[in-house]
Length: 124
Image (cartoon, rainbow, N blue to C red; front, side, top):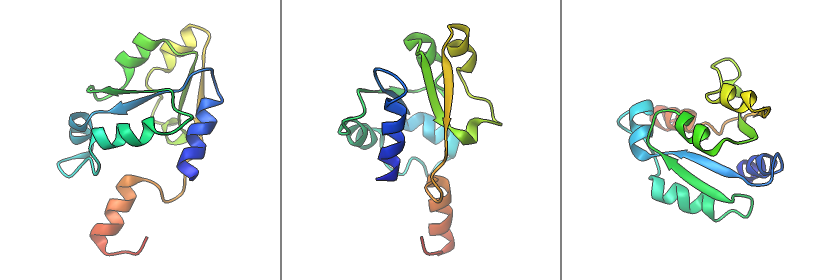
C-alpha cells in the first residue's frame, strides 16, 4: 500500500506517469546473479495494473538516461537515496526548465535489504 502511495505522489507531479523499469538483464548486471527476484514481465504487469501508472517502459541499459533523453519529461521523480549518488538525467530535465523531485524512502522496503535478511535468517 505504501509503495503505491509513492507512485500516486509521483503521478501528482505531472500529467502522465511513465515508470522506467530496468530489464531483467540490467538488474542482473547491476545487482548480481541472484537478481531480479521477480521477472520484468511480472513487474510490468503489477505496475501496469495500478491506476496511477499511465505507462511502463522497460529499458535494458544500466541507467535510464537514454529513456529520459527520449521522453524529455518535465518532472523526474526518484527516491531520495539518489540525492548523494547523483540523479541520472537531472541535467536533461533541468536544461529544459524541468524539475527533479526526490521522494522519501520507505523504511525496510529495499529489496536488497529484504534479501539480506532472508539470507541471514532474520525475521522481516
